[in-house]
Length: 288
Image (cartoon, rainbow, N blue to C red):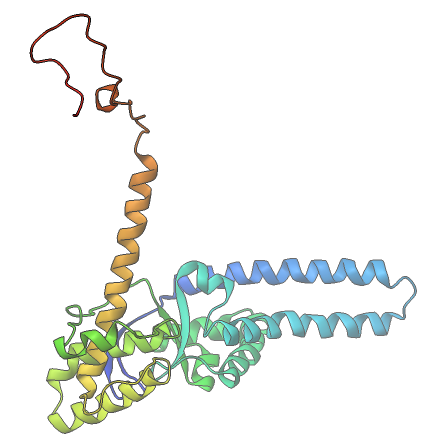
């Protein structure tokens, strides 16, 4: 585990990805890249019948750079720090302050990785990862990033509580656009706000609340403190998630229940009164 300070100055605990897991993720990515290169080679061979050897070599070099550099840049930029290998092993690339990986950081990592991993057989990357306290290879050092494991234990603290005065407002919130990294930052802020001085607590809460307000609507009532706003948003999101789980469980239970046909009750069906054959007391008497 390692402590880092996010862009909102909130201390969070992260688990640094260990070298064996990173190697396994790299091997999976390398397999994907190798398959892509083989496909490109056969595509060029089948579409270009007569070509100069120098041109073919240039095309192969171009596609090699695109596959081994463009693949990590594209996937890490679009998925906020993940490739297929990292996704399979629960890893993510983040900035040194815990912020999502940027395009320029992904580009620096990919260019450095092409040299230290593919050109130099991974020797500098392994040595640098072993001596770095945060397991950084040279590309991480240049880009200001690190690789974390998202499957490690997290100290999220108690669940957020809904302020009673905000329950009606929170029930109308649109929360579908909230990003996961911002939700985690908000949880960590609530868990550690009592350790901060009142001034720092208010300042940091205002920053986190301002970021959340960009994804949440409608705005809160006037005069709501930042920590109450954050608690209301997280509590409402958690409540909706629990309600979805309950509905799914109820639907599965109803689908698994055996079908029992309902037998008709003939006693409840009014029959035609029998015609009396003779005088008898206490029988059916038609209304007068």
